[in-house]
Length: 236
Length: 239
Image 1 (tube, each protein chain N blue to C red):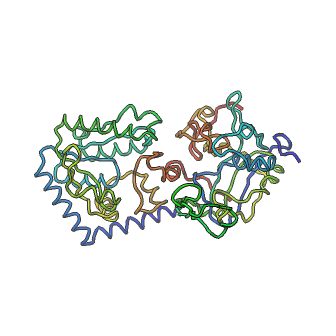
Image 2 (image 1 turned 60 degrees about the vertical axis):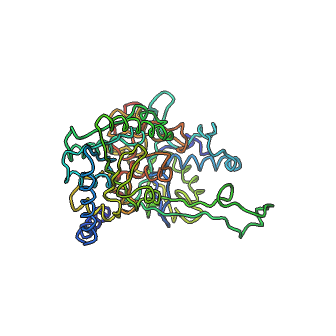
Image 3 (image 1 turned 90 degrees about the vertical axis):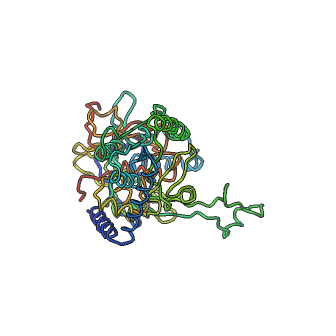
């Protein structure tokens, strides 16, 4: 089955996740198109995915065609119809995790050195402060191919950061079609980061990424942040 | 709703703390230190960042010397969001007259490099401060530094110290804890930047500190800054 753009019918969707544990984040939002891009890459290139550089965007990744509708605001520029995460709680808390050298699996690492430096280098200990959100339900709005999205979401291990230590465990999820498309704007409120180029009225602007990968510096521009007031230009 | 409840709890707690003998003694001591400093100086000034500590010191000093000069440094748009800066300036204009207020900045802070090149603002800040201190003949500086904030501050400062230029530095709330400062703020209904409420929600009132935003000098709190500045309440009800 192909999950490329245009393979199925695009329709307004609501994706709901029921969470088993809090979600750990280093950013206030999870972007649904970022999530789908990540899953699509894992699905289409399972081997290359493990060998991607961590600080540079591979051209192929930037050009992924997602099973989501596009909104063109300039000749070659578009954003996907995909909202950011909507949590059922407004609270956020801080937790600290400690990454320490563990001698338990030392034999598996085949280390020849007799002394391990834990203050720097590969085995450095870390104390990391992380923000977590005790959400029980996370909602996304999108406009895309429901079947392709359902298939991709099957491979999703969890939501947010540090899923390997138990954060962001998904209990269940459902993808259902809805009447209205609230994936970019809902009643005058931005549902994702939208570049200023695409809007004519806005209440505020901050430097944010507007397309996947959202960690990449080159994707940052002045944008209307999610849940701020805005009105799109009439270009599509 | 929950955050409002937490704020109410905090206000009640701090107002109760303001009734304690321990707190009252600290306020009296701070007043004595300020009076002593004022007797030593002819032209003192208060350095105000806009944080809770410096606003407390400003309020305490204004009670003793209503015409004291007030120095405020604007870190520029990259390090201090304009909404926060405007709020601080508005508060200062409410607390003192315009002829008392000296607000300075540097054009070099308008470039994004200011975020990681922190020597840039140190240089600009000290050059401007040195020049204005000479022009206005300032001979004593009131600062909102507290020993509790860091070990470095505890070892470098005291109620009275001298800086590298030979200027006397007076820290009237040097022995205050975070509870004392918030108790003073709430008991005297002092205005404070709204960003504190959002910070307190995340890290608690004891750790809520106002510093520059998205500053590589405080890289450990950059994730926090995104939550404090960008996270907004979703205005719709989900079924």
